[in-house]
Length: 498
Ligand code: BES
Ligand code: MN
Ligand code: ZN
Image (cartoon, rainbow, N blue to C red):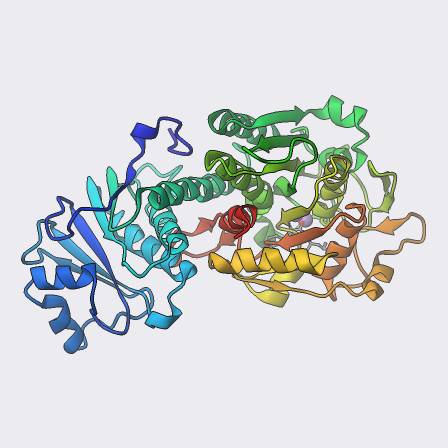
């Protein structure tokens, strides 16, 4: 049913044709990318010549400007075999980067996927770097997939074939795999909470692990109890769906044999009602997205494995449903986390950090060189940074700088928030080692990060709060509303270390 990480190479439907010419391409549509500088040289100039200078004329007339994400479909273009030529704007030539190309290609394919298309050809410009081509290909693969899992009449249809003209085979293969990763995370986030709960998330993960050659361990309730994961179990107690802890392992060629080089950790709250500190209905509606960090963790590890990157990664996801059932954990409860740290519960809606306390402790025990966690952790982070920017928090500045650079290199905006030790005072408790909220609402994203820091045992760590970017309330030109696959591309880039 899904295309993700098909192990049948031949079945891949996103392919390179480095030698093809856009004018003679047998495709329903050809997409060319135009900057504000005008038609210029390269393959787009060939297209222009084939059409008898149509593009140059349209640019001169001011009908097409090449502005960022400007999408101009030209039907029945003269001189081309294709039935349609889409001119996709990239903005100023000197500002074009991998993130621009990801979104631009996605905008074009999202537009075209509104109809059934057997073949769509996109034309890579000769000036793009390999990384930029990969991200363009990834964007093209993401844009054509919609939010249609449960719609009887689909709004988007995957193209029968996507052909990248002028792009090297390897870059297109890589980009197609990255698209699979992003689309996997999006699909999981978009699944309704009654279909995706800890057990079914674990089953999805097992299938993905099988297709990508990762080892997987799934800890059920009994195993969690044996492992003293009382924090995870406490959060899960209000639900009829029991928690799971996923541990995935990928050992790439040349990756370290012993300790993992990187641990990815994800918050996998498959639905967050708030628990007894119940959310109002409006805030609860979107809370199927509260496993987006877990989805990004699984998807990034799977993508690294599918790309056979030379690294040893462990990925762990804490899966629970935060509900209000008769056994639900209560305000004033004191939980002993796996690490031995005691946590006084002041608000059952600050559940993500409690779940992550145990997941981080399990991962700490595996002695990875570095840890990144991804979590839709706080509304406060959205207040601080808005909907599109993820918050970064760290105990190790050089590592955080690397994470930020990787995210920015692929066009995923991030911004670091401070971790002054004064914030630690805010999570002190009168009765336990710590409490699960700060004093009042102020600095809520940071006090949450301070809480997590207690469980990483001094290993270099960066926390990414993706409460804003993980979920698009409304559609954007390059993506349908819903899960966005936030941080999958950033983590793949981090793992590649370039
Ligand atoms: N899952 C939410 C955070 C969230 C909010 C994610 C909006 C995505 C969109 C988290 O569990 C939560 O409820 N956090 C509380 C913490 C508070 C009780 C200290 C919040 O941010 O309000
Ligand atoms: Mn919550
Ligand atoms: Zn939550």
